[in-house]
Length: 438
Image (tube, rainbow, N blue to C red; front, side):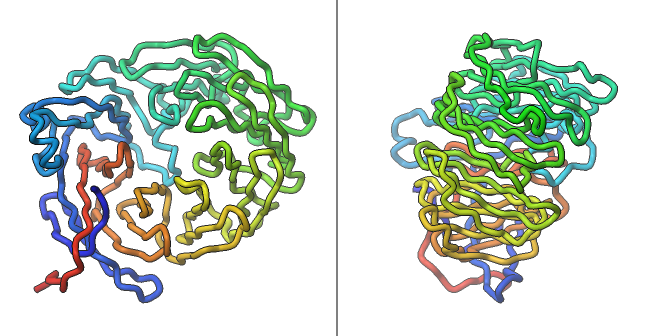
């Protein structure tokens, strides 16, 4: 069972340091981070999609895994299950943005590589240089969507191509730009406008897994709003569509089925939605949460029930980026902000169950069993108890630009300049008197 622990062994070879928490005068816990996977590339990596394979222990070690990664039962069977990089995004070498999804913009990402289990490149896909393309994943990372984005110098550049994990094109849309895709291959598309703010008007279009148009979701406020954002639920059966006003308001949300049937609509007449990745999340049959802003003021968190009723809206007292995510059980909502605050809300009442105030620029959050794993820009990883909000540890990779991902119950850290990906095994042990620094 992979869980977090209360004492630390520092692995010097990967440059992991542990520091005391500066917030609330609380002493950080310590971690035993045993490196169980290490893979180096010849290029700087921005992101990775892992796939799984069952191989012999010898093959696993050749793929970068260490024997400590596996249980005695797994080792006794002669073959072990492993993760391996199936798809990676390669950096252009430009200074990276703090935005969580900016690494998938072609201004920062130069190339997509598709690998087999032995590390052989199956396909290389080169991207436009100045942000004309953006990469989206399906919720379960089954597909890679490359969307064509219009720009001032190429206002008619639109459409997109869906690839499977072998790098094979599944379909291509030559009309509107697809901006979300499900694990079945359904997609939501719209005609994007390069202008800021974009001109009002435009609808959403829904395509089936063969790339055929099956529905048009009309914009009911064509004189005021334009298509901005779309996201499919993890089960793939629903999607949330967002229309944004010319001055960022009104904001109109529509929940649709995967074939384009509208379930409900809800309008925020005085609020704006930025469309940044991580600022909305939907979980059937619980509902939809999102971060919205009023004027130039602070952000607010809303909860719409599965039937489209506004249950509550709470101020978050932050004017910076604010991400939000349902807990795995759907009973809580976590929010994190670029200015360092984090809160946990009860989904039924909107009450704050706990909060944490810090100064780190948090940009990514993952729930791992009963814990939260957060990335602090640019080189820190935080571990919290998801039930109490207690900081267990703060880990730093000095001088590194890192990205964080949790896939298949494993925690991986992508070290961009080091051109490597590290996987960690984290276990809880009985608390012992610390010997660090002795």
